Length: 232
Image (cartoon, rainbow, N blue to C red; front, side, top):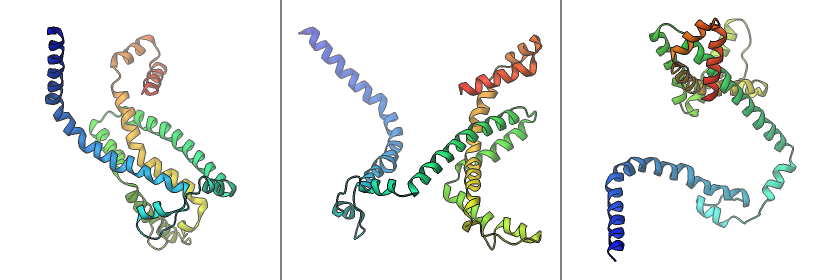
């Protein structure tokens, strides 16, 4: 009985100890938890719309509840249409380009900034490249509109000043793959560059000194950078 009482007392002490030590951490994590619940988990309820013949006749919840259940008929309609394969092709193609450019360009810019001798210039370039990452896509679309607007856009003003005719960019679909790729790369380039730059700057100088002693400064430096960037 004594041993059981001791075990029970130890468990109670551990519980009290956990409550007193982790209350502060729990409060710190609470805003993030609430944010994820409100904006990541609750919106998942909207998936049910894909399996219903959704009709708008009132509030959102009443619409979801009153719309009839049709199972996979919406998916059948989608994949029987010609647009489904265009959507799949564009999704896969864009993501391949985003992944490739999202690796190659940040690594290249990180290496170039890492080779700068001026720390002040390096900080300025990092800040300029990292700033677009904090912009929402609404702001990015507004920036794109400032360049592509038909009557006030910067590109059309340049074309008119050079004697050309203005182009209605928003009505010409052949240009938009390049615009979408450019905006995506411009927005995410700074974040990836900072990650790879942190990896490059963390390399000990003794590796480079050893490469110079071995007589292969350039080749060994490329090997060191490639290994560290691939590990990151």
